[in-house]
Amino acid sequence: MKPYFSMDTMRLGFPVKVLGQPGLKSHDTRRWQNHPHLSVSLAYLRDIFVYLHRQGIRMYRIASDLAPYVTHPDMPWFHSQIDECATELTVLGETVKSQTLRLSFHQSLSNVMNAQDEAIARNSAAQITAQARILESMGLGPEAVIVTHVGGVYGDRESALERFTERYRRLPEFVRRRLALENDDRRFCVADIVQIHHETGVPLVFDYLHFLNHNPQRIPVMEALELCLRTWPRDVQPKIHFSSPRTAMRVIEQTHSETSQKTRRLRAPRPFHHADFIDPFQFVSFVRAAKDRNLRAFDVMVEAKAKDLAVLHLCKQMARFAPEIMSE
Image 1 (cartoon, rainbow, N blue to C red):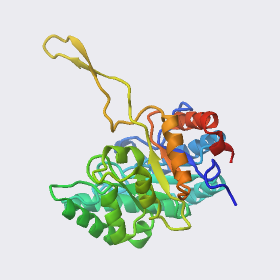
Image 2 (cartoon, one colour):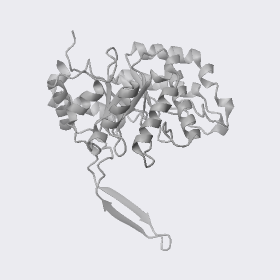
Image 3 (cartoon, rainbow, N blue to C red):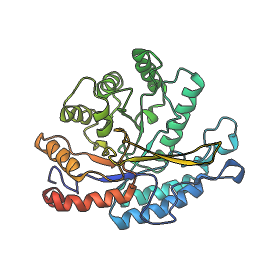
Image 4 (cartoon, rainbow, N blue to C red):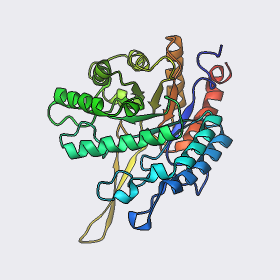
């Protein structure tokens, strides 16, 4: 039996953009006039997977716009990209499985499941469905999830929560199986998403920095983590998000329109902004506390501005400051 927490049981990953190798693109970002296509994005993704394998990184968040304009209501000629790339998706899925790579999507801020505007909600559901189809076409297991937030409060928290639940239930079954719900830093806390889980069964992604910023019930951090880990099926390893708050001074530059003179103002960091790298002592304390509490093993999406460089640096720091986690 594998040790409870080690680098064999806990994968570390990062979102979308690769910084450690110049020239690697996450997806086809061309405008619609230039005929972007999922096939181009998949070619980019293959190159990223080679890099991940070489670096020993086994978790990665795919760009939410991997299939450009695939659900755009006014551009139906983009809607068939997933079907057109069926073979490429199958082959790429085999690469993912051979590397034991865990993939995920994360919904962009423009996708709001509980929007009051039905058109926005429909577009959000269409985007989630397209991403689920991509993961299904790759033949990936249930650990490949699509993470989303509840959405907006719109002046009525309970109605907002109910609207999310209602929209979730409307999704096709294969899409619901892929969806996971995350707490956020200002609107919906862990207690809110736990309420939705009880009504829907949706698994919950614990976001550490969001929790520190928004925890009105003052739930202890390990208790909140455990609440989220318990929501995942027994045969699927949970995933969490971890980031450290930015502590560096912000420099705000402004140019006056009348004089063209530039001024610089110094501002304190905001507690919900991500740091470039992860505080290794903070992370090690968190993992040790989870281990001491005998919680389920989990994977970690590292949300830091340095992306893959932050993951690689964190592994080095853990080897130095927590060798028992690296070698157990």
